[in-house]
Length: 267
Image (cartoon, rainbow, N blue to C red; front, side, top):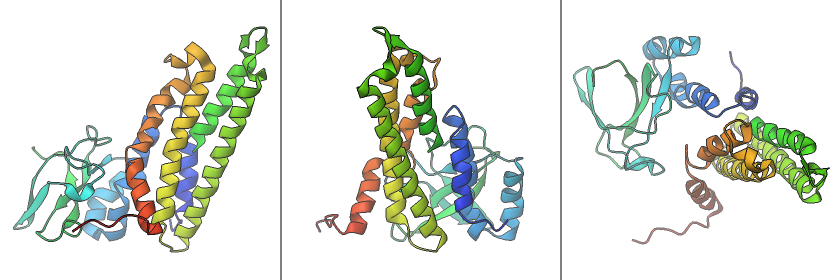
C-alpha cells in the first residue's frame, strides 16, 4: 500500500486497547517481526508462497530466534542450515516461539556459513508442516474509576492525595513515552538510524509497564490480585516487555554503545 512506518504505530496503539497481552503479541509477530524481512528481501516466489497468504490471514507466521543457549545473545545460536542440492538440511531447536504451535511457517534464523558469528546467518522461510502504549492508559483510567467509587474510612480511595498524585505522575510518564516513540518513528521514516532511540523506547516501555501495573494494582487492594480485573492480567502479561525482543540490559548496552560509554572487551 506504500504506507510508512508511522501507520504501524497507529495500529499498535489500537491493539493496546485489547484487554490482554497475548492477542496483540500474536498480531505483532505476524505483522512486524516474522514478515518484514521477507517483504523487503524475499524473492517473488517466496512472497507468493508465504507472504501473500500470511497477509490474507490464511497463514500464521512465527519467528524462530531464541534457543536454549541464545536469547539476548542472538549471535550465539547453534541452529545450522546446510545446503544440499536445492534444499537446506536444518539442525537445531528453537524455544519461546510466539504462535509456534499454530504457525504455518517460521522465519528461521540459522547459521549458514563458517564466517564470523555476526555475519554468518540467514533468515529462512521454513514450512511448519514438514516432518520433524494504549494498555497503560486503560489501566490508569480503570484504576481512576475504581478508586473513585471504592470507599475506605468513609471516603473514596481516589480522594487521598498519595493516590491521585501518583496516577497523575503515571499519566505524565505515559505521555513522555509517547513523545519518545513518535520522535523515533519520525526519524525512522526520514531514513535515519534509530537504533539508539528504538532501544531507549523499548527500555522505557518495559520499565514503565512494570511501574504502572504495580502502582495501580496496589490501589485496587486485594481485588487487584484476582483474575477478574484487567490490572491483574496486565501485571503478568506486560512483564514480558522487559524480556522478550531484547532484555532491558541489552537495550542499555546498545544505548551505551551509541553514547560511546560501553567499555571495550579486554583482549
